[in-house]
Image (cartoon, rainbow, N blue to C red; front, side, top):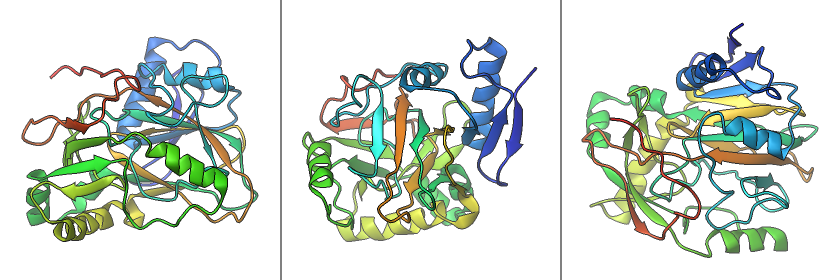
Amino acid sequence: MPPSIRKLTGRIGAVVEGVDLTAPPGPLTVTALRDALNEHKAIVFDDVNLDNAGQERVAGWFGDLTTAHPNVPAADGTTNVLAVDSETSKANEWHTDVSFVVNPPQATTLRSVVTTPYGGETLIANAAAAYRDLPEPLRALADSLRVVHTNQYDYARPSATTAQRQEYDRVFVSKPYEAEHPVVRVHPLTGERGLFIGGFAKRIVGLSSSDSADLLRIFQSYVTRPENILRWTWSPNQLLIFDNRITQHYGVDNYDDHPRRLNRVTIAGDVPVGVDGRRSEQLVGDASHYSSVLEVAA
């Protein structure tokens, strides 16, 4: 039987039922899950019985895995798992994962390991819906622009308050990366256009820093409209998969000092392509140790 898909909001998100994530999938199952991810941008599985190896295996249904991160070490005993742990990082900035490399992950999986008694939601925004919301003059402008993403972020961000978070931040930026991407990315599977910006986007090519910041703020305000957002409240043993090509996400820091941990595994992606057919370029750093490049047929 095909999986059951239940929409969570009108613009983003669905719960998937009827799939045994512990069993080898048939080709129809993988196709149905990919189709659901293409349509809903984020899909959720409840009551999963997965450990790190199981999460890696399920992520592998969608493609080759990246290592945990270009700079941050993997969780103990793994190569591909990054611990998104409140002890080291709150992740409470809107971003697309690892967008400072030339081929960011195509998709991200998050598995709930330690959940909070309240708060701690993950917000996921549909960047294609945001693009469609833009007035036509802003769409035309966005289509023509390129933007540099970097892990040397200088956006307004609270200083780390503990030694563990300070060390995480130090490691995160220890090797610099910069990539130039189109502001509007064309999804290679659906052809949808989406705003490809977020917290690692530093400057628009050809504009001053102040003009870049003003314009990115305008574009970002469309991404984070409430209508475009899934607000996911975590329970134990859940798996969330989102399309990193055409979403942004944010971990809400509203759970006081309770521990929170999600384990992340990401899937190797293709090089983004803009409306004009021009591909992204790596400007600083070599991330080939982090991810292979997915070649997508034209």
